[in-house]
Image (cartoon, rainbow, N blue to C red; front, side, top):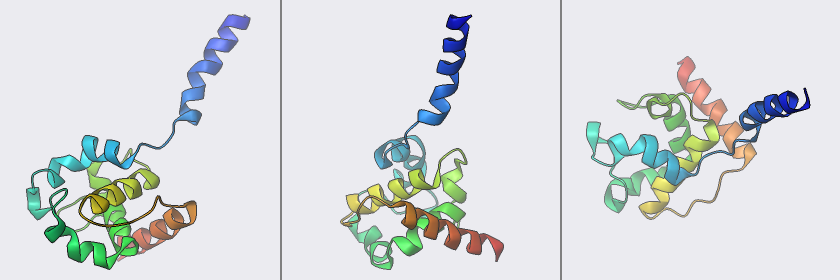
Length: 123
């Protein structure tokens, strides 16, 4: 009985203990599809010229766009299983690879960006 309880507890624990993926991991699993090749005119990873204007616009525009979708990019890059934090980390990772100097997002940042994304979705 005790072993069964431990096994059940162990199986349920990963759902609560999973840490958010890094921006590099999210990029490699999802974003690379378009940002690695320029598909649908997505700015190429590491291309400072293509990212310059986006970096100037800042994370308050970039992250909500990624969360809600923009032009041919679907919401969350087409991967609804990603958290808002993971999307923010991926955006920061890509922007920083092209010359941005953005820091790890805070919980307050993520909440603010989610609100902006939700407003865009309601339009």
